Length: 426
Image (tube, rainbow, N blue to C red; front, side):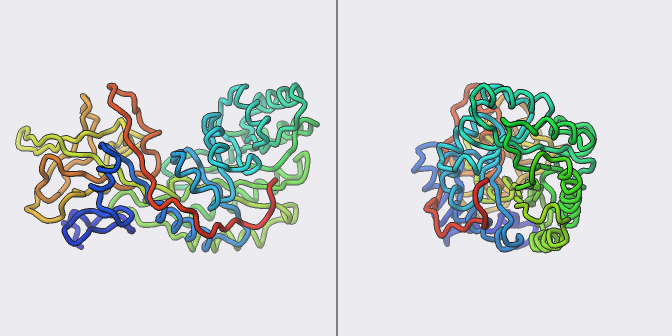
């Protein structure tokens, strides 16, 4: 394929049939839309998710646990399919706690991080027996008070805001003033409060950044994290049984992006773990991934409802838009708007034309593609927006202007040969 080929940016795992229709999990995109009875529609290929999980398992050192960050995509069918494939779920709300439990993930394999946990969320987590990732001294005090009132012991990790960041991250979660976690300099004081009968201390959680394609930067952050945790472990109220190293593994959304060298990340982490301080000798380690596991497995299908020209520019107007795919519109943290990979899912052949693909909302922000080269696209054709498996529907303003929610379908969801990291639940 050449750069001028509209399919050149189609992610691995997708292809067309002999008549040019896009295939998703072996079926034409139009067949998925017909089954759903409507567009717009998200389709997630669980076969691609399983393949990615297998790649991660093969690259990570033996025994390192793999957690799924539910916020990336909390579709219930997807969560159920993920349960036998990963070692735990990381959540960020009481709603995600309910979804994780309903999917069948054991409470002791669920950890709840995020600032601003309400008392009812703390109580639900403690009652369920899931792990709290404590974000502040105030949250620690509230958790202790709630657990004491309930006559239960709360499993808790301390989330640390590290004195470093993950270089080159799309979103920085550590270093400097952050709402996430306890500053490393203040950790000893909070750890002292966790030496309480109502707390079962589990370990530490450090998340320095996300969406990073630089293997060396990820390896450096993981090494710094392990060194920091080893230093803090001396002040811990008990043995450190688990360290959540965070994630940060990025995916290539745009033409200049190069895929993360996963093997290099795994090899470097293996070297770091072999050289870790003795205070962490009996500790388990986890990597927390969301986007990296599911983003490339998702497709957003939206149908062209109008063709129009304005000042010489062709606009293809679709029945979808930023209310379902905010990130693809360039309105979810992007400093410069760039096109997600997208194609005409109905046809591959035809005279090439350059078009702006826009949604159905009354705002100029509703743009799915600008200056996109496609085969001549007709009203009724399907547009496929790739990289839609993470931060799509639930990261978008779905209720804006009262349009109906998109349908969602999971392809190939039967679990096969689950493989967990060694070790028991905490």
